[in-house]
Length: 107
Image 1 (tube, rainbow, N blue to C red):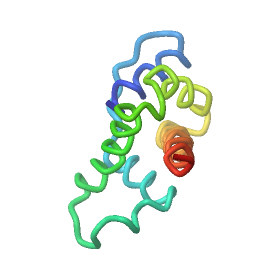
Image 2: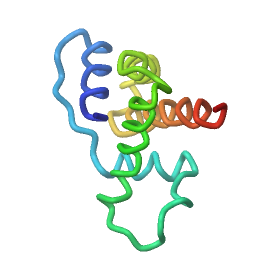
Image 3: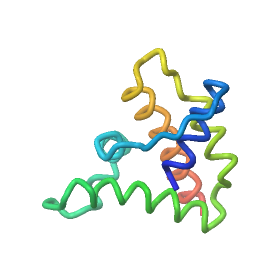
Image 4: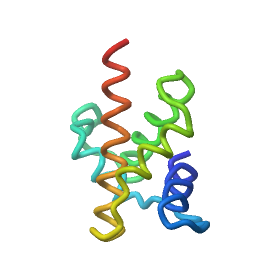
């Protein structure tokens, strides 16, 4: 789901289709920057860490905390590619996860 959302957001920013995959490194950094790492066991594989962020986004969508279109808009609005692809994607996804966290906390 995150790959679709990110690809759509980047395509919107660039004005042309981009099929992108978000790397595990980006998602692990998002996990750390959002403070969610503390909820996972200490010794787990990197792929499991990145899956936690993907699962949170899927949960938020399924639970109607946000729509796919809204997630795309949030990423597109924060996707500043002048900072470099890695930093831009981390910053944009951190913003998306923070929105999700706030909405879950409000309910």
